[in-house]
Length: 502
Image (cartoon, rainbow, N blue to C red):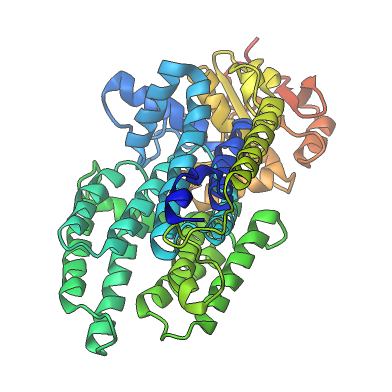
């Protein structure tokens, strides 16, 4: 077959094209079949509503009764405004589809990077699948999705080695600092590459460019200054450091991955593949690629919340070394697949139709039927039960996973003891909450001392439920298999100013 005949075959119908479209569109298909579940989403939405309504960013807590008025750093105010705007315009459907769009955008940008480094053959899309699903545990409807997009854009700027275009990172960092605290990783990425490129220049490695290294140092410094353009100024970085110290030992997503769930196993496969590619390539390993792989592997092993970013970097490094390793993953369009005329087009069309059909059926079977809380919110939230607490003066000790939802739906009628803002509550308060919900000694003092009026917990998972059943001070107001609500019989001593809501 001639080259002209080759060009008549649409790329989408080649094996590589079918694989590409299947992998890319499987990402939104996966999240469109999952309900809204992230516990942080809800207080982000309510904070966005407060900012929009008052034209001011809160500096003190207004949602909890255990630490009323405590200093609170709202570092993601820009993202919260955007999310609230989306919700106001499109309801919870807007947030639902925003999550899918952002993740499709992230991995489309990653795909462009991989294609640039290793071509557009089937191997590229297998690698993209590992990259995407190696970070799937981080696919939540939170401001960190803005960070994912901006991180890939930054990696793209670094990869292009364009001494003029790299300056775009400075305004990106300034915007990023008002969307999400992960901007520090963006600055760190540029600085890490600057270090590696400087070492290459100093050691006179092949491809070293001292001018490029110096430019990266300037951009990293300017980007760091750009992050100061936020309501907290340099204090944002201090807060980010403090946040990591507090939540590192308290929050599951900040713990090391267990490698028992599928996402972690896929990430491990990607890591092993990257190591293998670097080990068997004939050329000397590029210091920049090595530095990136080591740094982001360490980040991933330290905290599961870093898996998605680390997977992107490992995929980027592996793509740059695959050709040299001769792993058979090349196959870009400059060297087309071995298609044989019309029958291959027909097979490609059939394969694409099957892939799209399967993804569509999966979404149609699982997509929420409406955007009411009962229809679009994950079933781990006892929506109907929590709605019964929406009465003025309610002070509820509840699962922190549910507390954010109560904040969005029922504040200011309802105030919570603790939600998922552990950095705001601090280590001591968070441990008091954990001890109380576990029914450990001191739970009575925690509930009485805070003048709690209601407790909403899980009957089969939270030991506090049995202690409250046995206590003469509390009675069951509502119970089902998901949640049990207790209400005080009479106010605790000294809490008469907080009468039991009728």
